[in-house]
Length: 174
Image (cartoon, rainbow, N blue to C red; front, side, top):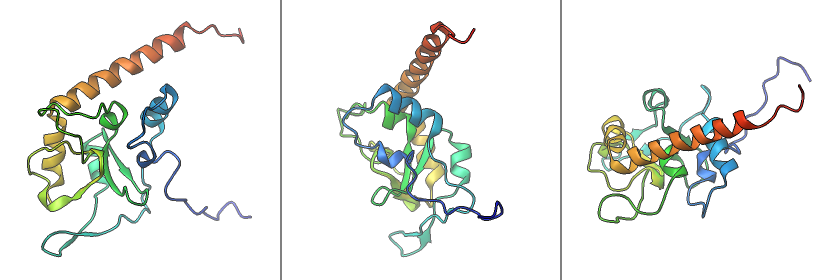
């Protein structure tokens, strides 16, 4: 086999965030893996087009991942779309809005990009975000929620604790 041949990329990738959505409880190892090695679509990945309510087709834009570092994309069948990595990891089943069940961005990917600036309704955690027309507005609204801020703080604390534990482990190779 030639070194010049490119390998076929398998989708979904084992570290695709879709594998972790709706997990009963993530292990510490899974949380670390998701924080450190979440799959990011490469430049050749073809994002699927999704028709909005007017029939216009829209796609997830790779630039969203750069602008919103907490955002992850899933290619897992049935979960294709955007998720909040931190809220998925720290998901507790309820949002700060009157114990409302969490939904898009946390348990389902967001896919309705036309309606992206509509009110926050527990999105990015249980189901994918797919409303791409006004996605940036919806992403900004999500990152301003108390639930997201809490998840970010918990993730930061979790990573700090892991770093301390790593520093305390003796180096057996000295």
